[in-house]
Length: 209
Ligand code: NI
Image (cartoon, rainbow, N blue to C red; front, side):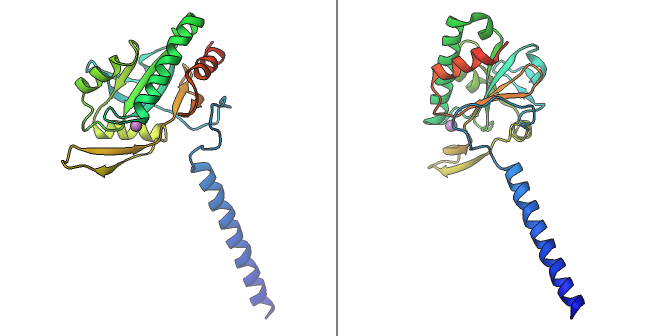
């Protein structure tokens, strides 16, 4: 009897330990939805990493293509009816504001738009799209595998949703955070859709040095 009770106790302890471990893993893996605004990095945020993609002029680029630059990274797709154009417009307005208030800082920020829909967002489509927002906005596409790798690095979620009448007519659900990355590729801050252009410009002005 005694050994049976000990066994049960051991099982309960093991189960509790497994639960705690599972909760910890879930927290560690889970998306950061805690702050609506931006947050300074502590060096431990696992966002970002190497990527190889194709820019709006058809050149193959990696994250090392902009030495000394902070990257302002946004993932989305050009056929997006609402969120992407709004966020990209916000980021463009923030860049214009920063160019006016702190031109040296603005010159060190490279805005980047990475598509999650390379099937429709070809080099030509990206070129027409990014030039409508900001003269320095870079648009990146690539093979599905290249885009998937970039999405994994930035922990971006996206999935085809709501199919329209033709195969080429669909919406894409996707996470919509803008990331500021330091010149050495570390996460510095993120901005959700609710942050205003003025707030983004102010944060960039504080963080870029
Ligand atoms: Ni979108």
